Length: 73
Picture 1: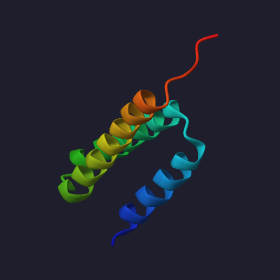
Picture 2 (picture 1 turned 180 degrees about the vertical axis):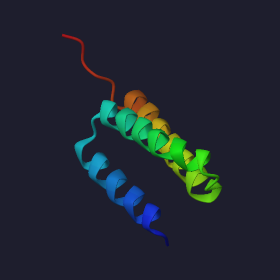
Picture 3 (picture 1 turned 60 degrees about the horizontal axis):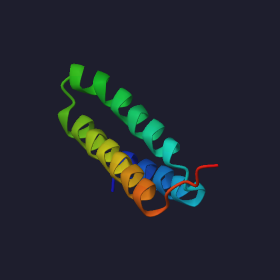
Picture 4 (picture 1 turned 90 degrees about the vertical axis):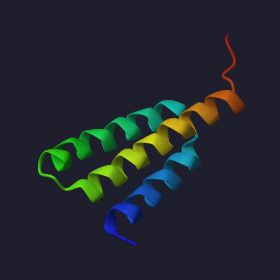
């Protein structure tokens, strides 16, 4: 298990506790932002892993949005 794996799991569990869908979107965008310089320096393994983590955050956002719809006031 590498450092980025531990960071992903830690962030993912913290965000699951809060269960706010927009936080998953921001985390996914943050991971994609971190991956861009790694692709530029040809660090493909870590950059690819970060894009998969971003996809996991976006997928979780979709699941939370579908399973727990917000009440419209």
